[in-house]
Image 1 (cartoon, one colour):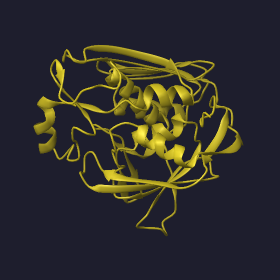
Image 2 (cartoon, rainbow, N blue to C red):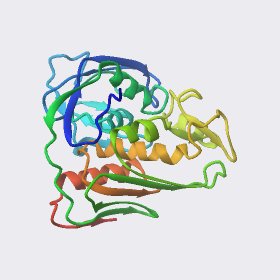
Image 3 (cartoon, helix red, strand yellow):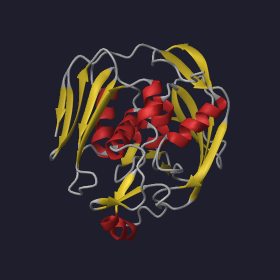
Image 4 (spheres, one colour):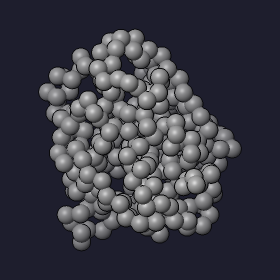
Length: 288
């Protein structure tokens, strides 16, 4: 029996609590997350080592860093690399959940959203009724940074697309798009792992990044080859870009729109999420 909803018309939370722990991609530290059911719309974060602190609902205005991950400033604490977990929650149709965290970074696990999907499947989903109708997008929103851009267009349903271009022959130019449903997310997007480049490893480590990166949690490209094949999809990198896009958009809630990112980044994705969360649906927004 398929455990996932057929579409995003209904509201769901988790049917029980489930935990995962592992290393953080950038910190290299062991971190832990407990996912719990909630009847409050949205995703709320609390701390396993600070149980008296109030839960905070996630919002794109909390984004404080977008270099190689999406990090949030939650009062006096910072929480990094939230995008894969948020993509898993939103992708399978969860609209309400509590995230209790130990540490300052979400565990990377295998570098994709698949382990989070498997964790959610262990406890299942609880139906909360109809999801409040998404406000239709009345005018396009386009954000540009150099040659990169992300755009949201009015649509009767959620469609996602991404294109990437890299000089490395192993990646090159890739394009992937789909009409998103929970099942399509689980099968076509969730397994796609994060990726990086062998010639950038030393530079990133010197900058205090990717301390937890390894060949078992990230694809590593070396020009025209991969250091750790096989890929799960021939176009796994662009599918992972869609995973990141979805996770960043989840900070604002899934839009009723067609969203496309060309050479996207967490900075552009989260800027679009802010625009979708704050811009009137009846007026266009364009920025560069």
